[in-house]
Each structure stands twice: as structure tokens, then as C-alpha cells.
Length: 86
Image (cartoon, rainbow, N blue to C red; front, top):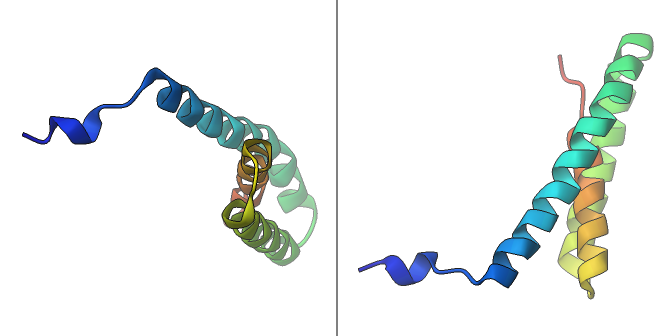
């Protein structure tokens, strides 16, 4: 009955995986330096930096005109999500 909602073409699945990889790889890679900076510097500034980057990349995703811009904005979103809140 609802099977038509879950039918994706191979091309759509590949584009989704590229978005996921762009986000997750930078999220993991940037987590280590952000953790180091959280131990060394004030977390207040790191959180502000993360929120500013996250907000700018979210706006850029909405305004992206090409696929390359969208992927770069997703990568930046991965950087902005690594806010050391602990």
C-alpha cells in the first residue's frame, strides 16, 4: 500500500550517501581538535563559534544553487555541530 513512498532510484541513494559522508567525516575529524580546544580554552567561545558556523552553513544550504555548494555546506554543518558542551 505505501510501497511507493520507499522506492528510490540508485542515483538518489548515491546522492544521499554523499551528503551523509560529507557531514559525518568532517564531524568525526573536527571532534578531536574541538575536544582539545575545549580542554585548553573557554568553552563559551567554542560554543559561540559552533553556533555561528552551524547557522551560516544552514543558511548556505538553503541558498545553495549547485550540488557542490550543497555538499560544501553539509561539510561545514558537520564542523558547526561539533560543539563541546560537556
